[in-house]
Image (cartoon, rainbow, N blue to C red; front, side, top):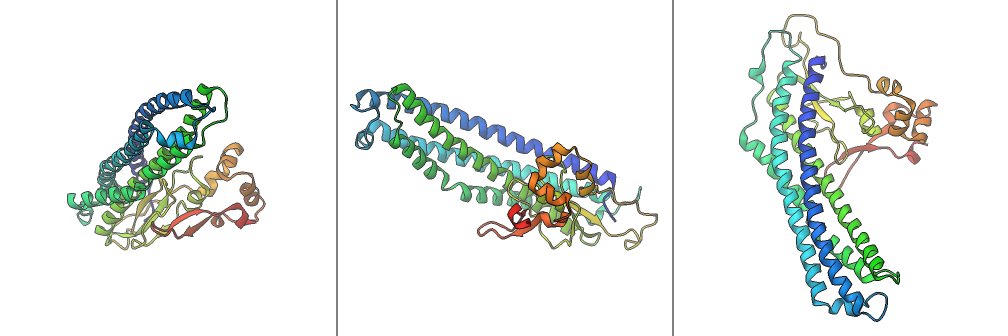
Amino acid sequence: MPPTPATLQAVAADRAATDTRLDQVTRDLTAAWATSWAAQDAQLTAILAGLVAAAAAAWPTRRQLNASFRLQIAFAGLQFTFVRLADLAAALIETAAQEAARSAAAAQAAMIVSQLPPGVGLTDGVAALADDDITDLARRARKAAAETLQSMPGQIGDAIRGEVIRGHRSTDPRRAIEQVLNGAQQHSSAALARTLLVARTEIMDAHRAAAQATQDTAADLLSGWAWISRLDTDVCPSCWALHGTTYPLSEPGPLDHPAGRCRRVPVLKSWADLGLPGTEPTDATPDAEAVFRALPRADQLRIMGPGRLHLLDTGQVAWTDLARRRDNPGWRPSYTVVPLKDLT
């Protein structure tokens, strides 16, 4: 039994709820990063101004910088700040993962009901996930995030220290300090971007794990699951190509790329196989390639890029050629976009 319009409505509602959680985590981490960096920037500016004023050259030497007790304390404080930010990220991820897992379990039941004939209830075959199971998924998300971010404070501390040691050649002390701290802030921003990527990935993986566990409780009702993508201009070619593909219940997934937002949607067995009356509705899952071809050319280019789009237009590659599975040591397999050079 394929997904119905009501199934896709349940998918959209679940997606909106999860996006709200991801957006809140993004706002919370971005605000914490901005506040922390403002304090660090002010402290480093004051210390470096004193060192530059006392230096005979345009920028203090490595020896002079290393001899500054205040600067070394500032470096240690900066690294500790990023330890606290990593801890905050792990805690926010755990909370959001728990909410996402609980939401995913409820959404799966709604998706299954949406594929049944009107008035028919077989939801006794769908067992609610225990609170302990949901808590365990959230803890696993926090543990994975903490392990991934463990090296971040040391790396960013070393990078910012390197910026200060290298200095800047400007003869204007104020500009030299500004340029050095701009470089340091870029490292901070890169660390935030990495942390947000980890957060989105772990929260969505907890969501998918809860969806799979819920589907396992309804195995007698289901024939498998479908990979459902958002089908907008922010979705990568790989996820466009995999939209609508189906898999057995035993297959984990969707195994999309980091920060991917694709959904695992249950596919009911045929009504006949379940002994249910009536004529099944047709599959409401949009054909991804047809949707793509109906988009404005500018949107097609944004999704595929000119080279990949040319290959599709001229028939040199097929829709199914756009995605491939990639093994990632220390993480999990994922489906990613086939590089353009491998398509030609």
